[in-house]
Amino acid sequence: MAIDYSELIPNNVQLSDNVRLQRALEAWQPRYIEWWRELGPEGYQDIEVYLRTAISVESGGWAHYDYVKMPDYRWGIFLSPAVEDRRIGFGEHKGDAVWQDVPGEYRSTLRRLIVTQGDTEPASVEQQRLLGKTCPSLYDLRNLFQVNVEEGRHLWAMVYLLDAHFGRDGREEAEEMLDRHSGDPDKPRILGAFNEVTPDWLSFFMFTYFTDRDGKYQLASLAESAFDPLSRTCRFMLTEEAHHMFVGESGVGRIVQRACELMKEHKISDPADVRAHGGIDLETLQRYINFHYSVSADLFGAEQSTNAANYYTAGLKGRYQESKIGDDHVLGEEAYQVPSLEGGSLEVAALSALNERLRDDYTADCARGLARWNKVIAAHGIAFELRLPVSAFNRQIGTFAGAFFSPEGAPMAEAAWLGKRNQWLPDDDDHAYIASLMKPVTGVGQMANWIAPPARGINGQPIEYEYVRLA
Ligand code: BYC
Image 1 (spheres, rainbow, N blue to C red):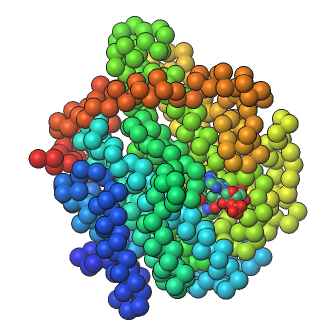
Image 2: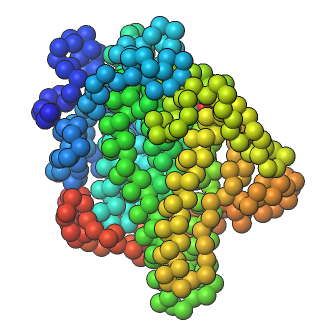
């Protein structure tokens, strides 16, 4: 079904049939636009950007590409097609028909999950708002803005659910989405990683690789939900999310590629010497990986969580690809291994370990990208391997919060750990060096020296394409 995207709020939820809902969303829209102008990409509000807009939810041909000024982007509401006779796949209601309305007993829990999800979306736009000023190319600038407008759309997706299904409380929550701000000491965003800064493009690529990937796993778990509108919303969001992780994986990959090229070209044996030639050395990349992986690992919550067990039993949030798992989907008797503070692992009830299980799925996925980057390094004949730290490293949430472990998993005394901190995590010198590279490159087809060009352009266009019309 094609969607009329000349409408004020393009949608496939028959918005015009529900006057109350349509009014509520139309009343929220001006505040959203005001927020976008104030805290969205700074300095690029009236510039035309080659963006994709969702115009259908069908798997083939859902996206339309054209030049758009971002405040005019059509932020719409799209649900993936309903699955006929869809049944609840897990928990105590397993086998029942999915819900089209929120059951009273789960109202506040479900609202909290939707609010937590929704809060991350505008947070990331706020975190990235200054990056446009230092883009490494027009191609990258366009990708940044694509990610930004789609995170904005994901906020719309959650606000729709709140307005459509949670009455006055939902409307209040929708307002608060625009009142909290990333890093605001009085009204911060809900989850830790979304109050960190994204000061440079290396951080942006790491964020889209590691933190957007948390988004993929959380959305996939919510896509299993018994609350069908949430499931359908998340399924469509996942379609868009894939591009965000592509931006991260290819962005870091291109930086790795450039570091290797510089090492070959200048016959460098010590990776740190890449800096003398204006590249980002592999050891700095490793420190950024350590930081972004550990901060994103926190987003999965505690290793053992009664919240997560309750979400599962109630049918609100499942596991990653729940239907492909060969167990009873109730988890009354099952066990799962979680890492323990004393070393090794501990067998606990699988129901209590759902956050850890999702983090494990996520970690395996993160490792796949590192393997691809390591292939680039190996192909240049360079003896260096990027590694993920263990999940105990640098954690603020769960079992390992306040504990000190090396990236390889050795327990340490605090003072010894602090003594090594700058070898493992980006320090002031790294930040200053990366900041010194952040000079805008805006000529058509031009690329900053610290990053290799992409393999191809967007939507079949060449790399030498005016992805953003700056003039
Ligand atoms: N920071 O029982 P636990 C995305 C709190 S990203 C601060 O383990 P639970 C995106 C927790 O709330 C995906 N607080 O928690 C990416 C709890 O508080 P209470 C976002 C934290 O509930 C890039 C307490 O600690 N979506 O889409 O099992 C760009 C005990 O913890 C944190 C979702 O997260 C933290 N990191 O799990 C744009 C999905 N972690 O109850 C977008 C919805 C835990 O003691 N959210 N706490 O007051 C959830 O499923 C769950 O809320 C969590 C936490 C998985 C986040």
